[in-house]
Length: 396
Image 1 (cartoon, helix red, strand yellow):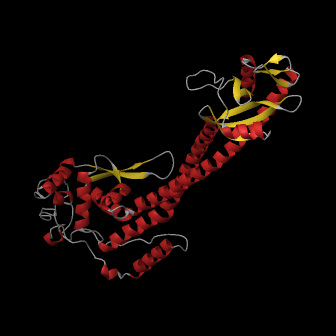
Image 2: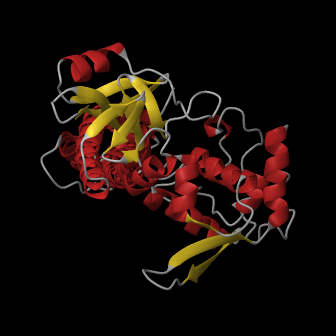
Image 3: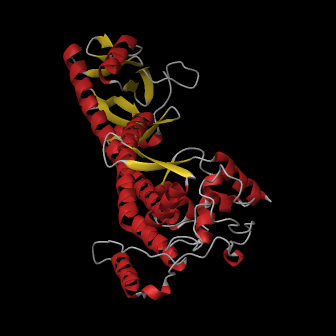
């Protein structure tokens, strides 16, 4: 079963991911419409610009002379330099039509050759040639979709002799949309990560950590140790839970806690699954050096105990649990917080056991100073062979 921390993390990340995907979908739909409108406006503007350039460069009326398109005295049919120049200025495809047939164009067919001699679509021909109106919008240009603008070419008497066209490939707005979405995705990813981290730190501080402290305090009470009050500010449900725990700690009668831990010689308190008798010789004061404590490594570690057993507030089951953790996990100096996390008890409780083991000579404590913050006391083994014996005994 997943932990609460993992469930909250999945909820936060899932919600942010769903929000990001929804946002990108809406943005893509919006950008598609905006890009389409921008392409049509560009085509309309480029058509007017190119028409002005042609009129100023080649004065005179449009006319059909012997099946060839002329502007004044200049032949436009097969005038490739003209259409290439206009295309270079605008970035569009450019075409001159005589009737509904392309006579000069930058549009290329599937073979890569200029599509001279091909026909315009029926919809465009009807709108421009028959109705005499400009055409703006999508059109099929030699098998490809373009955002287009067409206008009729009129002779002196008003007769429509052909058409002038500029077109923007459909890939233009697709590239525009793709580039915009990439930029928005990058920005959205950064913002999502930032919001996710802030939310996670908030949940960790306000929910997870207080619950963890309450859980550890409850474990202390369940194992017969005195628990400290938990400070959780605010009227939230977590604060109410912490308040209830603090009331329980206040009202818990001292008589319900053991006056002293059970003797290490009492076999009835041994943790299931952990073998070994209690202390056979409580008078030994130097663990790991004298063998008079018997073969039990727990008794060797705690050989300095008097006949009354463990100090008040400590019990053998928890002591064994901490010693086994140190024998299994700790390969170097450890702090009380690290051990507490491993054995699932509060740091304060674990610290008492570590200091007891330090008094017994099994551990050595040393303050470590960092660049900032308080110094941290770290404990290291002083009788490695005893902890090795504990690991061997547990394996049996």
